[in-house]
Image (cartoon, rainbow, N blue to C red; front, top):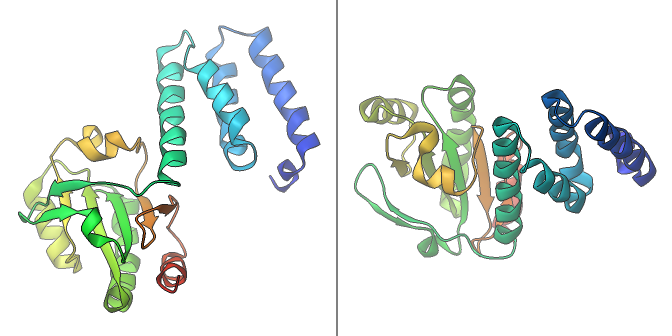
Length: 217
């Protein structure tokens, strides 16, 4: 994929993929191939990625159209969130009133996750360790749970040492907050700087280092 940083290489592949769509306009596989190509373009040419997604959002296959529209909505939202503070208010599962505006001056992780999904549970020890290490320095976490079972959520968070607030509405993938932000895969970890600006939507892996960098800004 490193070669895709070269504009000429991208243009060649883009032309091939576009030709595939043109020659087989009603074949869902051609549309799916273009959706996969969009994932590359998001990194190197977001304008072209958006143009393709707008076209695919009109596709005859409702699944392709829905996928493209969701990705387009997410891209547009993320562009907005990179410029404006993220505003979010809700009542946590423990009854606490949460308002991200009150957390300005802190580095905040917005963690979209669920107990029922293994990769999320595997990520938790790292998240807890980072929180325990950096909370005193101004690091906060706000969980957005895509769970359906409230008691299971409460039991798991207590056992795992997840002492931060959790949003819960029992709607799983139809979760009000995750749906608003176009979340279609978990775990999704968004990192907000002290001004409330979303600085990363991919905070997994090197979470501790990302948080440390934002804390000293």
